[in-house]
Image 1 (cartoon, rainbow, N blue to C red):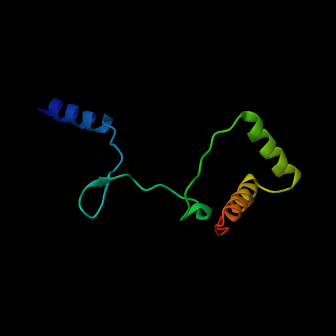
Image 2: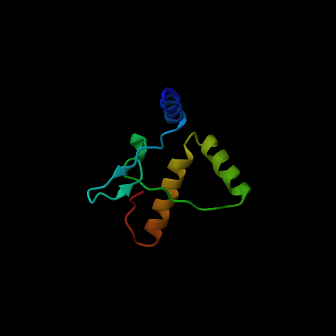
Image 3: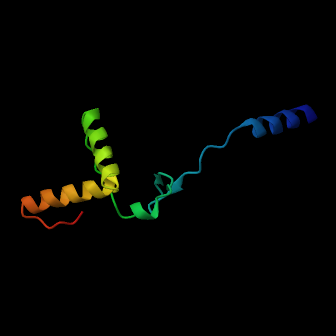
Length: 90
């Protein structure tokens, strides 16, 4: 009898609990929340794919101008928005 209890206790210790699943208001499991940097709260990523030379040149330009790639991309997007008659909101 003791051996069974010991075996059960050992098995329970070896079982790795999975991540706790959060539930939304309807009781449906939802994805666990992740940390979001304050500078990214309320924002969404925009992705584009370019040749490696484009990435390198963009990084070099950012370094030469003592700016971030983020600020250069904001400026570029705002220029495109203006070109097409939209508000510069980036």
